[in-house]
Image (tube, rainbow, N blue to C red; front, side):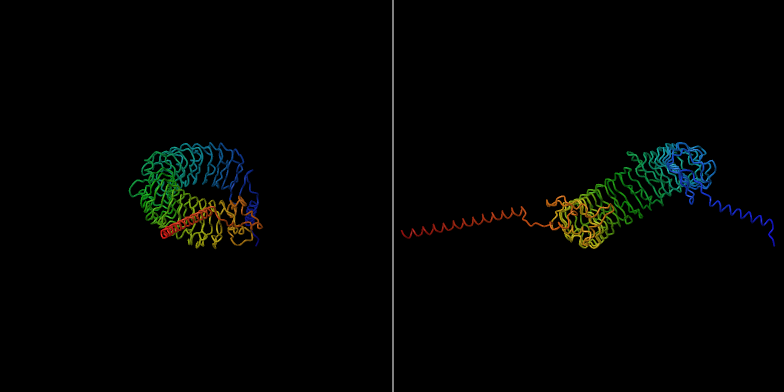
Length: 598
């Protein structure tokens, strides 16, 4: 049966459509001149072309448009025809000062707009009307003020970045229509006032960044306007000399109010004099707390005990002079504690009882002496940093509680001897002793510490070291440079270990991340024949010159001469006394003889 005319027409039409569809697939993808286009992701990227206007021949199916580092000062309509597929528009690092009101009218589904590093002084009307936006980035412009209606139409906005501008005032309710807002950046501005009315109960806000502002007044209870925040970045935002603002910084309205989701709180650099322990009741699930760069002088007893999930605590760069017993009582959740750059002079016994620390940083303090109870309670500690203190004495008993220690940093202290302090530390893998005053290292200094992989002894006063000192099975790197080495027979083993085919001490061939080999910088200071001579440069044929000269020291000579003179003087005295006695005997004998004769 022959097919009807209608069926043949439909078949021909279908064939034509399929043919045209396939043909379109093989057509070249039209890309604007001087731009790069990624057909798979529908991305058009125009970078450093010095365009003064947006290219007119943009592909209609573009999803991402990047016009980066151009020469725009004026932003007209983005496209003369609708580009309904455009989702992301990057206009960063141009010189845009003005945008026409309908600049974005032909991109009705735009989700992300990045206007960072331009010259805008206010939020353009074109941006305020882009109701489809979910992310708006106006970072690093010249914004001086905001109007209460700037974001009224952006009800879908989830991310707003206004950081690094010149904002000094935020109108009440300026963010009140942003019911979906999750992340708000206001850092690096000049904002002077902080109140709850500004945020208008942003119930979905998860991150609020206010670091580096000049806030002089904080309304009590302002935190109630951001009840579900996860991250609060408030570092260096208070102007100095405003104690009331500091007192209200972590307050909320109502005695039953708390922030159940807050996990990260940064209040560094606000010149706080005291730790607001009672305010922490607002944040029962806090995991990260940064109180650094303040003027805190003391840590109240059990101040952090109510923070049962706190894992990281930063108290560095304060004025803490002493740590009290019980300061960290019942703070078992804290794993990382930073007390560096303070004025701590000693660690009283029991300071860290009640902790489960894994990392403790006490660098850049004034600690001179440690006692046997200083580290009690640190049985689970992995990393201990004591760099740049004044420690001049350290015993094995002091370090004994550190059963799990992996890294010990004692650089730039005043240690003179290494005897048995670091023996039998089975978990220790890295020991840093650089920049001390060490003159002597016992041959068994590291005996039993078989997990040691790195020992750093550079920049000390070591003149010689025995080979058995480094007989450790897992040793990978040893730093011995910048010491006044006395190159005699006791240093011969070091030169022999440098030979490429030597397998005695493979750590001598270790090269660090900077490309420096372990033996680099091992230079002789004495005897005169090898002064300022790199040990590595001593030829194999000259190793025999590394000899030990046995001679009596000047002090020994003085002692021997002194003893000799004393013996001679004593012998002479005895001889004189004996001679005197004989003379007296002869005198008596002569007198008796004369008497008998008479």
